[in-house]
Amino acid sequence: MSLTKHIMPPTKHIMSLTKHIMSLTKHIKHIMSLTKHIKHIMSLTKHITSLNKHIISLNKHIMSPTKHITSLTKHVMSLNKHIMSLTKHITSLTKHTMSHTKHIRSLTKHIMSLTKHIKHIMSLTKHIMSHTKHIIHVTSLTKHIMSLTKHITSLPCHSQNTSCHTPNT
Image 1 (cartoon, rainbow, N blue to C red):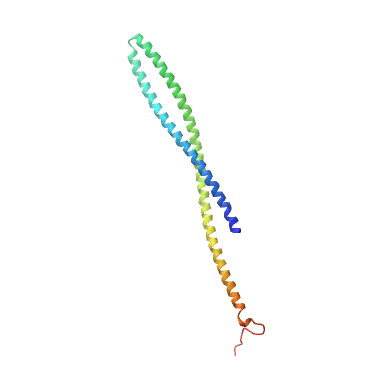
Image 2: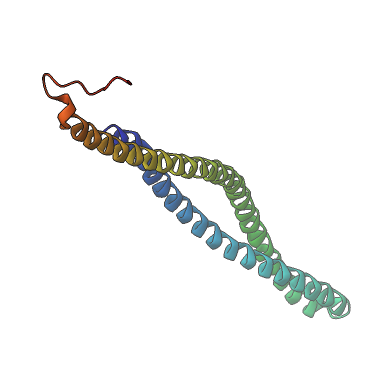
């Protein structure tokens, strides 16, 4: 009964750690999702760079015809607005990613700490198992001693008027 009381707290702690690890797994899945957003940001950045090169090319082309310049300028303005909007979106996502990166670091440290606790619990479990084997062995020896004691007390020399020891003559 005492051994069971000793084993239950580590077992409950292991269950709690398991639930916590499952929660951390959900966070990691969220991080994976954020990684996809980062890839999308990279793609958008390449697209912006491409658009900028295109704008430069258009600017060179616009220099001669005035009517064409007006039309292209409007197009460039529209593209610049789109770029500004994308830049704001990228900035927001970057801040969000930075925040999650800090959270990941914190979670990683916590996971490492939990892993150390689990290793310690495993060590304690091995120690408990070793003690349990000793207890079983002691119980077996106790039964053997009780059997021998019964056997000895039942020997004839222990009857009322009989001496067990005979003097050397």
